[in-house]
Image 1 (cartoon, rainbow, N blue to C red):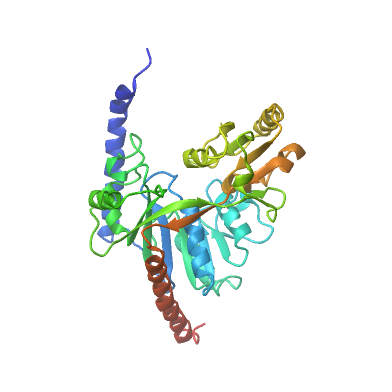
Image 2 (cartoon, one colour):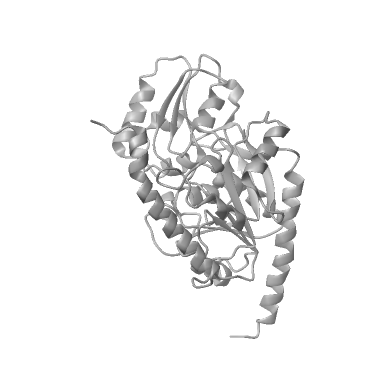
Length: 373
């Protein structure tokens, strides 16, 4: 007899309890200075979350890149999840998603003028970025998914939380999706509630703020996603508006992300004819799966049809030999972050003020130590 959801829940409870004890002890060791955190003389902004995936780290990181790269030399440091390499690696124009990971590859392709590096050891990675000849002009480092990486002390710690998955109702893994207890949110300087509906009411903002119980030094922001034009996989300069998708158009949607529900909901505003081939987050496609995608698309009998995927999935697919039919009909759908409650100006000012002040500190530090070997 198979076990029901409630029975499985109680079977996982001892594991959740043990996991919570380990996480709690680790945090205490950092709080007591037994495990050491390193501070750097360069502005460091961490973007992370309390839960496992799906909060929108990449779009929010790209927002910060676009904001800061106007005035500063920006570097992104990631661990490069699921890459086939190890240690520190600074991306080049020839780097592949297999070498640096899909998200760093996606960002390097969109923002070639910034430094993108990967290293599981974030302290070592920051030292390389600041000291190596290829990247020592960096003025601010963005840390991807580093809220739990307490060996680095960021100047601004940003935590993202999905509006549709309230963290105050969640539980620790493996029963729930929390990496840490919700009380850990007090380490954050900024909390951003992501994926909010655009018609959210003022009372909803107050309810969320009340449940989070943030402290006076913490800032709370609300964002939503805005979808851009479709871009041809073979040539990103070719754009196609979502409005060109008619109710008769049939979409083959291919995703390997943590939560595709908002994307499906957006596409259903255009057409109900959606075949969704859904894979796990950061999925590595096999030859057989790519053949199945091609056969599925070929089997769709419709006068107008196309394949749509996310930017992250497109970054992985770029490393494969794709069938011409797939390549010629494949489009990516980019997303951007938009702040609600007219909070954009406040957020931008807070971030740029911090980087401006601390970039000057780095310049002074470099000049002071210029005589040292």
